[in-house]
Length: 273
Length: 297
Ligand SMILES: Nc1ncnc2c1ncn2[C@@H]1O[C@H](COP(=O)(O)OP(=O)(O)OP(=O)(O)O)[C@@H](O)[C@H]1O
Ligand SMILES: [Mg+2]
Image 1 (tube, each protein chain N blue to C red):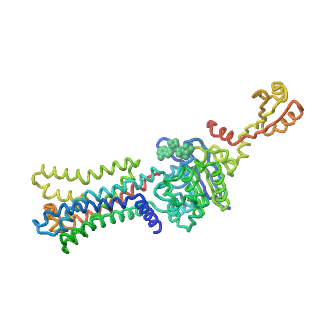
Image 2 (tube, rainbow over the protein chains, first blue to last red; image 1 turned 120 degrees about the horizontal axis):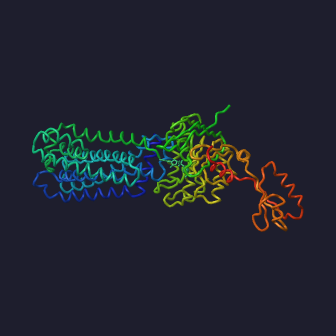
Image 3 (cartoon, protein in one colour; image 1 turned 30 degrees about the horizontal axis):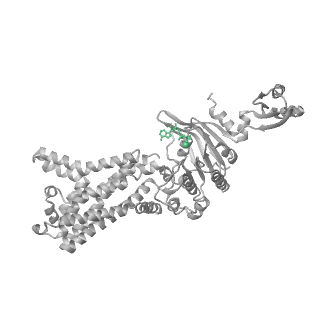
């Protein structure tokens, strides 16, 4: 336990020292505030409070930003140590590889969580102050922060997996960029193409929602939309959410970090410093 | 009868088609300092990594204080100084050593250790600002954590200035005095010659020598070098002694340890014809060349 804490506190010190934490928190706050004010115009027409609109726009933002920020911290986790030559020394200490990975994960996830809570939270507070907030929209905000952390967790562990697979930091960075592109952009484009090609056939009705929810980024979107009618209303994306049972998106989003961690640990075990 | 602290038996390591280590036997007892020599790529670092359990053996067995390499017990018992060590540049020396102390699990006087290796001034500065030698010292400080049973030092003096090297060997002596078995991979022959108890030489993954310096010299039968300076005609002196003239005034005579006294007596008998005599026994460098270059029979 002390070993896990030692790794985690050292990683947090590094994130604080190289200003990563400050920069990311600032980015989150700025984006969230900008979206909140930009999205405040249609409030009246839809008949929902400003915070609801804000949460809907921030959900879209988080789909891109949470995986990106998570991969940015995690791609270096193992490849960086290996390239510096400090991995061999670290592994000669009694801490197990799973313990090392878990310590890094705890530190990275709490840093991400901090940035998200401050960013989304401050935007939410501003929206509530200017445009009012109901109980439902507050719950939606809390859900947004929680699910963003889960999404971040999924991409953190995927980043560790790449970092253990890569032979160098540069390769790990390239693989992380590719992974982000595939999960966040190309996956949806591919699905869209398939749906258009299928023209409303069995694929669109039976298979498509499941393929979609298998991607953590889409599961994140579906969960936030399905859970809140008014968020769904403002995002105009309800079809897929209705075709799936309520547990599908939460299950997908919660299982990704677990499977990803197990895979990263499995590959890390094989890494020879 | 006590078992040696570090036992390596018939250790072999294949990397693809390349046999990096083949049937290496080596033991290091508690308090012993053993030097591990060999050309670049001879397999020194690989041997150390197998002892640490960082890379699996293809054959043979290793015991570290009775435990399997890489087991929790073995990792607690060993200290390691990697070749060209490096740390996260954003951390301070104190933070880095504190991390290692907490990973080690034993209570440690972090500031005291940093002071011991001469980093008391720099301990609260970022490692990114350290010189190579300072990083090396930080690496040495973590070796001293928690009284290791076995210490594996891979080229510990690389990047250190002459005074720091002396300090380093003083620290190694301290480790040995407290009962740590120390294995030092090195290219610095003159230092190793004076500061270790035993010398093992690897050539292309094969152990070709493993003994004390004196025994190795004897077994190799390397000649003692006598250099005689003539007061008059050096050529005549060369003829009389059967030596070889090496410059205008000096003659070099090679003789075996058994013939040494005889040769000296003959030189002394020549009286005024000889101005000076220098005697050099074979050094580790000669031995190293003899063992590391010799072709396998
Ligand atoms: N990760 C690796 N993959 C493949 N081959 C390797 C690897 N590490 C070492 N080798 C090979 O194993 C051999 C021994 O290397 P090693 O690093 O043990 O040499 P060394 O004796 O420490 O040399 P040096 O004095 O240069 O440090 C070399 O031929 C090297 O190419
Ligand atoms: Mg080496």
